[in-house]
Amino acid sequence: MDFYSSNISEAVIRRLTNYLHCLRLSRKKGRTLLTSSDISGTCGLKPSTIRKDLAQFGAYGVRGQGYDIEELTKHLNKILGIDRKKDVVLVGAGNLGTAMIKHPGFMRANFRFAAAFDNDPGKIGTLIGDTEILDVRDLNAFIKKKHIGIMVLTVPSPEAAAIVDDLDPAHVRGILNFTSEIFPRKKHGMYIHNIDLARELEIISFCMKHCLS
Amino acid sequence: MDFYSSNISEAVIRRLTNYLHCLRLSRKKGRTLLTSSDISGTCGLKPSTIRKDLAQFGAYGVRGQGYDIEELTKHLNKILGIDRKKDVVLVGAGNLGTAMIKHPGFMRANFRFAAAFDNDPGKIGTLIGDTEILDVRDLNAFIKKKHIGIMVLTVPSPEAAAIVDDLDPAHVRGILNFTSEIFPRKKHGMYIHNIDLARELEIISFCMKHCLS
DNA sequence: CCTTGTGAAAACTTTCACAGCT
DNA sequence: AGCTGTGAAAGTTTTCACAAGG
Image (cartoon, rainbow over all chains, first blue to last red; front, side, top):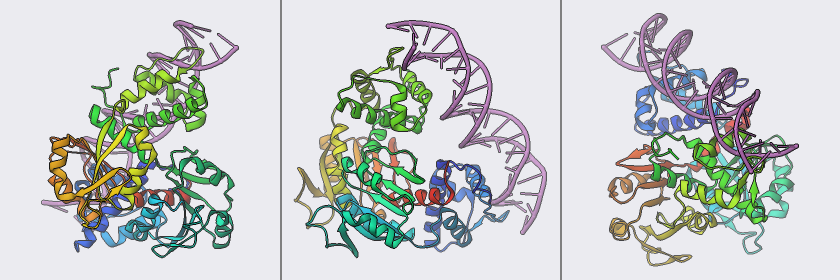
């Protein structure tokens, strides 16, 4: 377990989340053991890659058998830091924001939306599911008071920069940015993950045209 | 321009979409030339990487000056296959689907939602913006009649597999899959791009914990 | 003088092949 | 017999350093 010091690439982390997906599926089916080639079949990765990844994090399978689903799930949850509840705020209570709050995957991954924020007076005070929409002007005070570490940013792109610049980096350590704004990976000690939905379609468009390997 | 035969990695394509983003920003500011270090500043990539990428696709800049914004934009649009309008269908008219249809980035990238599909009788016949919601049972007929090449899949995860399996691969060539189901990259000649929003948060969670390089 | 284009080097990632356990 | 764990090899990507050219 020396991954604190070593540089893990994003590709590996992304694969870990895929393994977790396979584990959840298999557990639902009532299985207790899973081999690297089982995972390979579901995720479309080489068994050797999977074994390397897991070995790197000190996950020990049993030779001749495979990996214990229960144990490996716990192990991966811990590695990914989703082994205990994390409070998250949503900023931008539009359709995308609403979709995020209602997404079943977030609860499964132990994320809890502590509140949503918006600048539309018509939305402020209302609920999305169980999550209250508050005034975006109170965002920083809320983050400070509740010790929120993660922000999901789903405002219109032009508003993104101002919100991020105003943020107190002492508290928010991670941002999931869905605006088209590209922020640097790390900014004031915060980790920012940029996902632009339109850009993903552009990637598909290319792959369809040129038949990506 | 030999990228038809060569294997371009997804990382390169993703970067191309970033360059396009920079180009759009700079054009808005009234600039006509852009250097690799300008792009570097906005995207957080090394200038040498940017030049390699662009050279690979035969984009020629002017030594001592940089790249012509107008020309490079056209060039990249063409490479990505977004130089002309493409019809897309949305399947799953929930919050995420609505967000996709209303996302300004799609129009900018020349995508047009020809229709949305859902199985909720209360939604069928209504509109999202200008896009009509039709019965999901008519999906395949519609795709065939209108020659739709791309599908955006935003149904609840358990419904995803059935829809994809029923699809006529002669028509749909690309799927942007937002369910947690992991499909193989290529299936029956279709290219499938999997994005699970919860998985992206898991990645952030890891990065926050272990300080990704 | 400035910035592109590019071969060569360095760094990183994936795959292979087989030793090591159960 | 079967599957993991792993060092070494192959393959890929990024970075460097500098020649070429406006």
